Amino acid sequence: MDKTININLGGTLFQIDEDAFRILRDYLQAINSRFANVQGGNETIEDIETRIAEIFLSQKVLAGTISRENVEAMISIIGKPEDFDHGDVETLPPVYDNKKRRMFRNPEDTIIGGVCSGMAAYLDTDPVLFRILFVLFTAVFGIGFFVYLGLWAALPVARTDSQKREMYGNSYQTRIHDKKGEFSKSAGAPLSNAGYNSPSRIGNALDEIFRAIGRVFYIVLRIFLIMIGIALVLTGFLLILSFVMIFVFKFPGVFSMDSSGINLIYFPDFLNYIVNPASVPWIIVLTSIVFILPLIAIIYWGVKMIFWFRARDGVVSLVALVVWVMALAALAIIGFNEGISFAQTAKTSAETIIPHSPDTLFIKSEKKIADLVYEKEITLPHEEYSVFMNDGKRELYIRPFLAVDKSDNKSTRLELRKRSAGRTKIEALRKTEGLMYNYNISGDTLCLDEYFTSPAGRKWAADNVTLKLYIPVGTILKFENDPKIMLRSSFRNESDDYLESRWESINSLWVMTNDGLEPIDENSFHHK
Image (tube, rainbow, N blue to C red; front, side, top):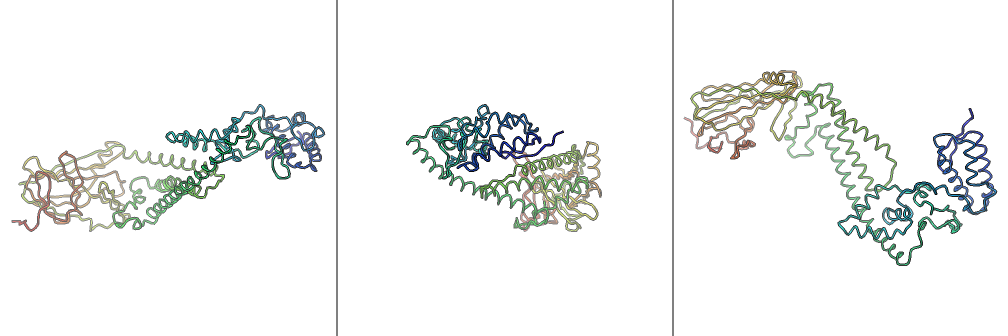
């Protein structure tokens, strides 16, 4: 097997066998000797090497090895070095005649993004025509503006010589620099004018006007993007800071004057009572990735908008996207497996009738939350659902709900409802029976616990205890303790819907009216 050698031609890496390499090396040395001392010779040599690379690419040898036959075919296309005239490479046959053309943004003739110039180069016409069309269509509901932005985002920039050849097609001429660095007329028109006739004076004037308008628009657009970038950076940074301060350092006071009301900071700890403890670290890590990665992306894009720099971040962005999708998928799988435990709900209820329906019903606290020993509290604010955690005993203490409503007869009764969730109805029903809540009735006094518990070590199952107290109109309720601390009641309104409680009053005396409970003045109350 022949030895292969790696070579670089026109910025492209090829593999070539040893015999073909010797022929190509001698050929390039002959070309170098012929043009080395000619004005513009270095550029000519570079163009010939680029043309050679293009021929090899057209022979589809990039994935294989260049053979002796490939090199000889290339020489037959370009010609021998002694056939070239000094300083003139027009005899080189174009290899792009049959190549499919593509549309690019032209970086050498730009007002805003080079879209119009790229379209003009592709269609061999004047870019002024496209600039006028975009201005006219922008005046029609901004259509031109959005089309321009879409093309700006979709079209790549023609940066390499190969891309510019694809953009211009047959009109692209080999470029040779003279002393001043300008393009030689013998080799074709400058790239910015290639493919179309020189613009008229009117067209040139319009082009300058559009350039001035484009510069103004560009400045306005940059200011707008900088403002958006600053907003994105600040938003992303503050959200990440909030996430870390709340869920890592558990320090909510920075974000609220009433830090005692923000106790969702203990939600990661509450997970130990909801799901399998082995899944908790994974849930926390995956949730952090799903939440923080998009915020980092927002900050990064904000920085790019502010400083308007280009970076080769495609691979990093793709890897970050894959990591985010995988984390989201894993979190969804874990959440689904754990969520099955809440697939079904069940309720049980028991009713107790209070004899003699007293005119004044005293409500007294038995087991008080103030006497509990617990480390953490979590509250769902919209439901006023509070859970107190004792990590040492692995116990949960949960506030019950009290709903006071008008009795449909003269009797006073109390209904106790329990609700839990489980994988099946039977499992959920068994969990409701395990909820422990105590109350008792002694004469005209109703003694209630301020919390209920579930069996130690059992996972939380959306447990809920609701007390439904029905009293006749005219019955007075007298609370021994602050009703805000003990109870969260709901009342019916005219549409028969349940509303949030009105226990914001510190009044301990209430009376049942046809419109529901109303506070009464303690000075006017005399218990006999």
